[in-house]
Image (cartoon, rainbow, N blue to C red; front, side):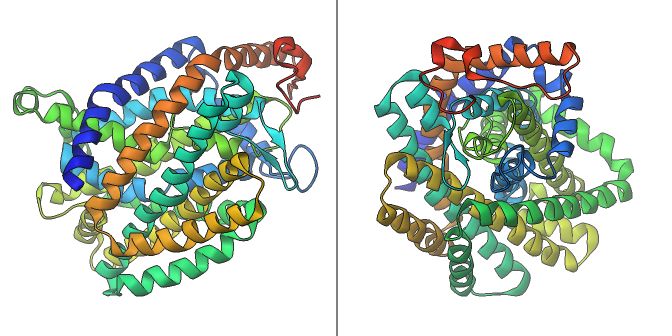
Length: 465
């Protein structure tokens, strides 16, 4: 079974998804006139301004909270175990291709999140939206919207949560010798307690956990890099040589580096996958572009900062050449070689926070799409039990290879569906960006959008009166 999954994954990733992701990223970068580079200052300003109350009713989700929910899903297993797996399988060159995916993928993230804001709908606790909503109301293809909703519910609410649990259990077993079954049971109970609280509780938990865990891990990585600053030029050289070197090309490892760098980069930053737009749609803002810019910043934060931290720790240690090490164990051994016996303990605690925050963020992506498909309270309850209960235990018991093979296939199908939609609807994101820039040039500090500005969509847009 695993061999069949791996063969299908190699075919999809090797010939279809990588070309579409990279090509689409460059296309969106060009059409937005390099928005991810030219408007970094505006991204930071918007994120700072949104750290307080949302632009609207006090029960609405603020831009910062929506950013935290999406970052909670982004900053997780992919940053510690995913980076390690990419290096173990594809070599140091995989890190370079993760960076490429972040640089061009942030434009893709801008487009999909702006569209999510444009086509969002009202909900009792907050706004709700995402690719299923902009596919139905923008492309008018109900079947495709339902297909996406099913794919993302399976990918994030179910399969992705098993990866997070598997990594937590592996880290805890490596650091403390704890039984994965017991750890899985505890995680199941705690996760169910949060997911039954809805988006408000998820947003509150994420807005606390995400900044604490990201800053703590970043500071540790900076300390290790400073302590080994003389090795940094060599590490950068190894990354570039492995990405393009003649020896690697002859040995066929350049292709492995590209494939694993793109796969793990996507798993980590999710740009183009269609997941973050579900969180982006919940925010109360005065213009769709505002949340698009903030979500683009999330890709930078995830890959260029957090993933790079893990990569530098592993490559400085030199233990990546040991074939018996993979996943979270590689990160733990690398950190232990740098800071001593407490390294694996730190990684275990970090991965607990990283992966747990991802689990609750992933859960919400599924919930938003279950609500899209049905208004049945029973269906939502069943999903909550499966996501927070059954798949958490499955992840605790399954092998590392099994859970990664399943998630790779799910990601490929989900990404293909979303890319078709944003290629078709991207023109509206470009027009919204032009409008936002024009208002800024006119001296308007906080641009606004009203749906009559896109008359051909007035019947399809529910909000933005």
